[in-house]
Length: 113
Length: 113
Image (cartoon, rainbow over all chains, first blue to last red; front, side, top):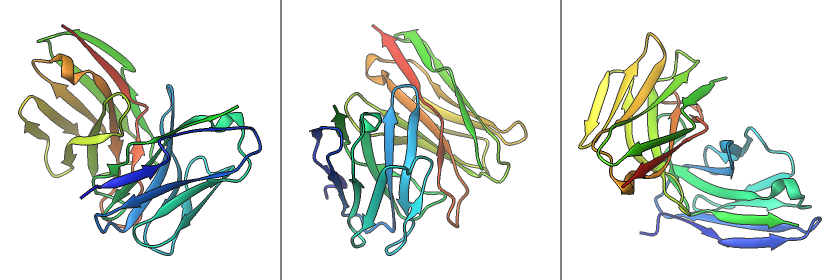
């Protein structure tokens, strides 16, 4: 039982390049989330998927797109990376949205030069 | 929407001392309050949570208290150890429905041997 897995662990991009961060969970959870973590800013929600087939914007969605590929997988895409997107990205999952523990992946450290 | 304030942002204690981290929330409908611990280089992990039908919950050296009237909740760690050094996040949400948790900005706890 791996929990929540994320790939890659580290990535360096040049401004304007695109990439997709992958996330998968094996706990049969309905809800999945993408957060970014910057020093002093805590965890900020980018997008979430309350259930398979649905996605919604969070607090900081600009510059990102997501795809809930199936119940297990939730990907985050940066179409044209900017230095302001340098951050640590965490994927999380939970059985439902409100009132449940969230399980976090190990994170992806992204640097945009 | 919900707003969660967390204090202090940094807390330095000596091994064996107690540590207290406080959070306030704005939405009186919030009824689920988890605390997460994030060790260096890892994703956050739930350490304790409390629901609004109880005022206190304990698990060995950690405890959480909730004051619904004042809309604040606190994490208490007794007999701190160096391995308690980490970033701690509080969160608030509403059980049921599509209420995404709102996180505080985190507290960096440093326990000096």
